[in-house]
Length: 165
Image (cartoon, rainbow, N blue to C red):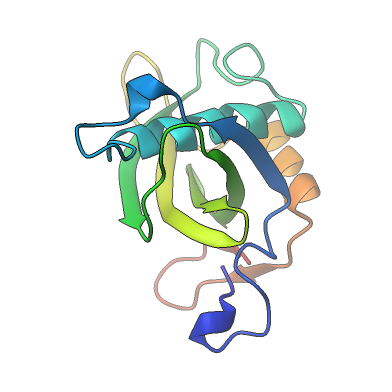
């Protein structure tokens, strides 16, 4: 994600096409009266669910089947500012990397223009029984590329997996 504070020309989140609004509930705050850290992953998950709807492939019906399912294999949350009970937050989501069998999502949570948290989650498509990686179904890949309208570049490191953004 481009960041004006890091010398980029765009404001944080300018490259995100999908934003999901949510309100912090009382059950999500801790004894410090701020959102407990683990809830940010739940906020990311809400955004992922809305992403599937936005690309026309709601989970699980349109993605999960006898040969394919998505498994989270990596999660990262960066905390920038606390969120409090009753705050309205926006959770932004975009696909930052599209590999042969994996999807790398980036997230930005903001309150107004203030960055609250950011992070990433990587999912791998796999056989649901054997739990072995499988290539992403072509209709899923095509729906993501169409939605993101990203120029796909090749990673010159040792992988020919396309990268978005």
